[in-house]
Length: 315
Image (cartoon, rainbow, N blue to C red; front, side, top):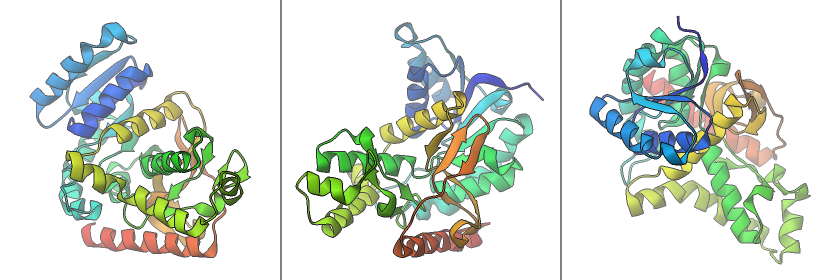
């Protein structure tokens, strides 16, 4: 088995999300080697060439198309392969198609790579993260999904716009399913340590319930709105992939709401969904206790049950 190259990433799937992620990772300067793998090798070759032509303006990185064997020494394997979400389709509609795609992809990755991190990006990400963990046989800390990292960024962006402040000063997250049953964890939201409602009032906003409902709905429907307008979403998720890879490669111990298999917190067991965790070089390094209201706990449990039902239907 190949020794891991800490500065190598493999991107499996060169559709919109895979190629945008590869571009964002090239720009990041995190890796010195990147292999692109796709069922259509010509597509992977074309993307590798196109991205490589920008290297005189970036940091050196060897980018090429390859196969699963070439991913054998990759520290991180980003899996974006799968059927895309079509207009009018929910993320969960994709399940059966993508689980069967994963049944051919994941064992191939695991055949050559035993020690890397599997970062699952394809949708529905929670179901596919659970599927990948089971199919790969990897320790659970090294198989996780992009989860609600992008939904959380959308929430911070919209709150930043609403309050007319830098979205990086907003501390709030979306938890649960990356999809229709996701929950905005308002109970623990704050702006630089100031409770959210207090900060809203400071900025002249008093209709808290109405605003919270509106913003949470906008976050949930963001993807549908973008798909309706341009056919697919890929820049936001590509930047989320870059952010997660930074936390891994630099061993940052960053707190991110990635999708990982739950074991008993809030009475949720044996299903992958997003909760804030510490992400570092060894993957998911521990859960972060989050304060939730009774209503949020119930909604989280309902989100987990939704996912479990789907899992029972496909695995």
